[in-house]
Length: 614
Image (cartoon, rainbow, N blue to C red; front, top):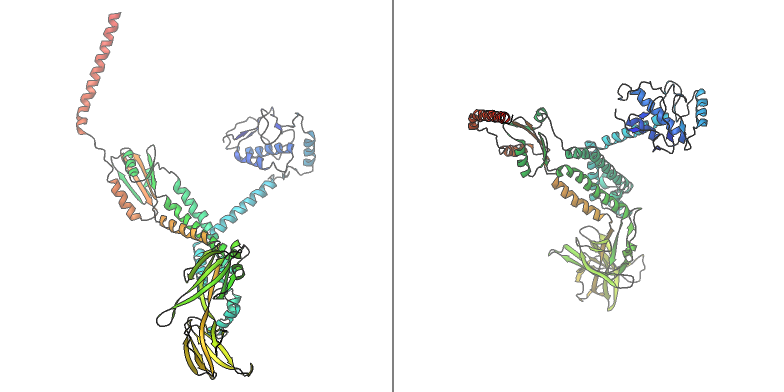
């Protein structure tokens, strides 16, 4: 084996401040890299004089075990570790050139006791270094553990199961309203819902009211990310490394094993190289061998797809544990602070400076279809800073939110806050409206008490409204009294009370979010689209070998093999065939005889010149 390192007295050792003395009996070489590495790893925790004794011991061990393979020939048999004594080993000197006698005597005394203190060497039959053996076993165990984890996590059935469970949870999160109050779920999913098998308590206990931030959902995302990383590191990256190598073949048998192979008689390697280069192949030649490829980006595309998915999941997770969210119902004309309406989503949430922004509801309007159904609702918003300056204003609607200072404000709901009326010429009075029906067919109602019967026997006039346009009025007995439009100033008398409907004041339902991971998610989706397109590129590889006058060509592709074989066949049809000129074969003997006659004439002329000189 080749010599890796030579330790001598000519220069200080790079392993420490001492020098090794050269014994008169033999020279000491580290004949293998393994023995030298063992010596390097034993330096920590060993005294300076003992370091070099350990180096020599490991050198002897490696020479003893590899005596049949070593190229170093010595006339003296090297002593084994079992019989190594201080007299056999080279002396160790300090910087002044004095031998460390104390260390040698201590070594002999401890060896007589049956134990060698040299970092785990025992004096019995088994002389393995315990420190190094434990370290090697530990690293070997970690390597086996890593391979086992990669094999388990990169399993295709496991990835499919993870995606299926995540998809099912997303479907549940779509069906069940997210982020509502406890009373909302207890009321909507009552004991009678789903035959009593599922109710609001189940929704709350299983965290189905916030599926996307639930611990099990985030854990599934982490497990899927680990599967993608394991698949990339154990499968995709090795494939890319193999694809990037310039592999040449030296036998036609290897080419014949490829998916596509063909032999071209009377063809040259250089002609094929020119044609492949013209077809945008990267061509490499070495002697009689050729290797060409194109579409290597298709090999990188799966890694890019995995990286894009990791970006998407990472951004979503960051928003789930580092964002803010909140909902609020604000009547027209009132104000609220952004920071008061939003709550942190996780332990990474950090409030921005924009939380000090004040929002004022200028006006809320509802648009309806001809049949009276609500088609769209809009809110005119103004944003003010702490100095009272308006920093932004916008009319938002469904699917047209307001973005400012990192947070986004969506138009999600609406309601009726109060009904403003005049009673017997006095007012205006604001009657608070309460929701009687929710969902698509909203219904709000209020009550105008009349008489002095107290709360127990209170009677009054009921008013119902489904939108901001009109109010339906009922008397104290529940009989229909009439309908009045908002702002019509047309009075109606009910139970001796004259009422004028001045206005119906609506409330806007706003949902606010601060998602710091949204840019990451958008970047991930952009990368996913790009890498998905790149994944359709075919990685094409072509090998060729010149065998005498014939050219052996083989190729393979990772996709669209039939189309690739057809295209390559067309390209090989353009490789020119070498044809010998028959007329040259007929005149070849004539040219040969003429050359012989000329050489003979030249020889005779030379002899004549030499004779004339003599």
